[in-house]
Structures are given as structure tokens and as C-alpha cells.
Image (tube, rainbow, N blue to C red; front, side):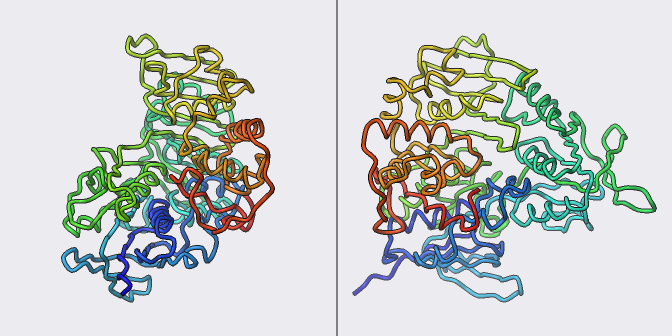
Amino acid sequence: MTPTPCRVLVVGNGMAGARLAEEIRHRDPGATRFAVTVVGEEPHAAYNRVLLSTVVAGGITPRDTRLKPDGWWAARHVDVVTGARVTAVDTAGRLATLTSADGAERTLAWDELVLATGSTAFVPPTEGLYAGPPGPDAPLADGVVAFRTVDDSSRIVAAAESASTAVVLGGGLLGLEAARGLLARGVEVTIVHPQDFPMDRQLDLDGGAVLTRVVRGIGARLVLGQLVTARHAARDGEPAHVVLTDGSALPADLVVVAAGVRPRTDLAVAMGLEVDRAVVVDDRLATSASHVHAIGECSQHRGEVPGLVQPGWDQARVLADVLTGSDATATYEGTSVLTRLKAHDIDLASMGTVDVDVHDPGHEVLAFTDPVRGRYAKLVLRQDRLVGAILLGVGDAAGALTQLYDTGAAVPRDRLALMLGRAVTRSSAPETANLAEMPGSAVICRCNTVTKSAIVGAFRAGADTVAGIAEATRATTGCGSCKSAVDGLCTWLRSVEPVSAPVEPAHPAHTSPDGNSPTPVPAPAALTEGAA
């Protein structure tokens, strides 16, 4: 008798939830052991949120952000329910109530439940931002958009058609990306940030000063150390504007809110789970209730709440091992934090521990400042390992240094060449050794989570150029910062093995050569309307 598949219900069709479904199916490709259902509130297929700023800038369309092509999930026996919310969960009876947009309800039974509800944009209760009383689900006023979802990006694009001025609330990563996109559309942009410099969570004072100069240099106005206290719509001949804490006013046909996010924990609270800042999980991503798990931005692991995509994907991989039994000892130990600003004319990467003084006795700190040219680099080393870095305007070095940070490899002795990226990117024996020693699981393209193994596999299948690798794996099609690393990997592969003739994969969903991670879906299937 065929055993009944274990029913896994994933609440949330974002990047973490979708990745979990994919990871489970890679471990059970025939769908004989696990029946996977993913429920998403948005009426869209899962998409890459990292690319939304590129949509605002006009580089790609919303459809280009899809994680998988139409029919991909159904072909792999993953039931995806869009436009519906899980409004109630019975943990004792293992039942979940789904409510669709039209109010219709239905009940699903589950054996393992995974919360991947993500976060929502935080919109402060500032006068004029809401259409009515402020609240988490309250509608925003006309001319106000919170930048969080693919629909938000479409609203911003539509508003930019008629707006001549825009104010972006928040000078963090998302705020700067939104501002750059609006500038590309010819809108006059002012960024209002309450701290002394933008991206204050990722930069030190010197780096922040250089970034401030760069942002102003690309045409944005930057107002620091202030908040917006009110927003007034246009009326009686007076243009729309916002009011700052000092009483001054800024014209604002459009207001884009990028003031941070808040984990979505309402369902977890209603279920009686342990919730602090987010849903508390242990090293195996289990919550306080049996058979209930949480991953991504709605989870809190060892006191940390992830705010980037990579931790959610790492958690999805671990949880898939746990649920399927593929690795009985799998645990999540945390993710090395790397932030990348993917805005045209701004090339910034920040990783690890950066708030370290150059004279700190426990670290070796290298710093280079060139404000006039918008360049700043700071490397923090400990025991010849890179533990933190700020890289602004030094894109040639960013890819190689990111790999050193990710892999924990020993850094070259030539510190100046290291800072410039030459010690780890030039064609030489050290590079060959570095690439050879890099594990297959090392992530080369963070935007699309393409590993070294995936690139090696694509190369051996005939994709022996950067363009070919991009088409086969989607590497370099996000922010593009990994292009030099992919080029270096191709150069190294050409030197150590012959190029194979192109071959068709035996199965569209297969594991990478090292067996540790799935090979990404080829770009023509995932992006049928053009590369990102």
C-alpha cells in the first residue's frame, strides 16, 4: 500500500515560502512523500522582491520578477493558492481556514505548518499619509505609496507619470533604491532621513559622509536629521507638500514610504505561539507549537529578525532537510549579513562587522577615502579573515571581497592589492587556488542565489561565457555586481577543463554537482519577457 504523503502547508508565497516549497520538491521530486500547498495573499505568482527597484527604474517589467515560469509549480505537484489568506489555524486539529478575496472560506488539513508571512511596510501615523484613521491595514491617501510589493512598484511607476516632485521617507536601502528609480523617470526627488547620514545601519560615519555626497551628486536632494510631521494634498491652488520638523515645506506630488518593515505576526499571535519581535524559533526553525515552523522575516532566531532575503533562503534549505529527513542533524546557525545597494550610479556593499575603529587592537582595519570621486573602502580583518567591509564605488573589488567574506578564506598578504581587489581577481596562480578551494555551495550571485556548483554545471553543459551563464542560471541578471566573479570563474574553468558541448538536462529540476543545492531554473523559462 502506498503511504499517504505528509501534508505541508506553507503560509506565505514570498521568497522564503516559495523557496521552501522548491527545496522540499528537490528532495521529493516525485511528490510521493510530501504534498505541498503554498498560500499567498497577493494575487501573483511568487516574485523576486530584490528586483522591484529595477521595475521602478524601468529596467524590467513586473512580470520579469517572477521566480518561476507559468506552470512550473503545477508541473512539480506544488499546489499554489494565490489571492487568499489563512485567517485561522487549529493547531490541535491541524486545520487551517483559508479566506479568499471575495470572502469565500475553505478548510485545509495539514501535518506540518510553516509560517512564512514575511513583513509589511511600516507607515508612521503621520497626518495626511492615511486615507482615514492610521493602522496596519488601513488604506493610504492618494499620492502616498509604501514601497514593499510588486503592486507597490506598479503604483509608483503609474504615479511618476504625472508627478513632478516626490519625497521619499527613509534613507535606508529601499528608500535610496526607490529614489534612484524615480530620478531615472525624470522626477525631482527629496529623501528625508532622521539620522545623520543615509544607510546608517550599514555604514560608519566616514562611509555615510561619502554616500551622502554620492546621493546628492546623482541629483537627489537629501534632508538629514528631520522627520515629516504632516503631508497635505493639493487644494485651492496650493501644491501637494510635506512639512518637516523644522516647519519648512517640501513639494511632494508623490510620497513614497520606505521607513522600515514590521514582521507579520498576527496569525502567530492568534495561534498562541511565542512571539517577541517576531515568531520565536529554535535552531531547527520550530515554534512553540508542535509541527509548526517559521522562516523568513516573520521569524526570530537567537534574538535576530532577518531583514534580507538570504537568511530566509538559508532557513528554507535547513527546514526542508528537517521536514524531509534528508539531514537528521540539520540546524540553522545564522546567516552572514551582506547588504547590496542595487541603484544605478551607486555601487555599495556592506557586510559583517563594520563599526570598528582603525586602531582597535583586536582587528586589522584598512580604510581608503576618496570623497570627490565617491569612493570609500573599509576592510575589517581578524586573524587574516575578512569579517566586515564597506565598499562604495569600488565595484571591481566588491565581488572578490564578497567571496572572501562568504567563504571565510584567508586573505592575501598584500593588503593594498586586497583593498583594490587585484589580489583576488587578477589572472594568476593565487586566483586559481582560490577558485579551486571555494566550496560548491559558495553563493556567487546573491540576487538569484546561484552557487559555484550551479555555474560549474552550466559551464560543463556548454555555457562557457558570462552571457551563457546568465541565460542558463540567471547569475548576473540581478544587480550585476557578481559579473566579475562569474567571468573569473569561467576563465578558471577554461584553464582546467575543456568546454563540453551543450546538453539538455535529464530533468528540469535537479541537484547541483555537489548535491548540496538545487541548480536554478534557466532564465528563458524564468524570465520569458527579457533578462532582468
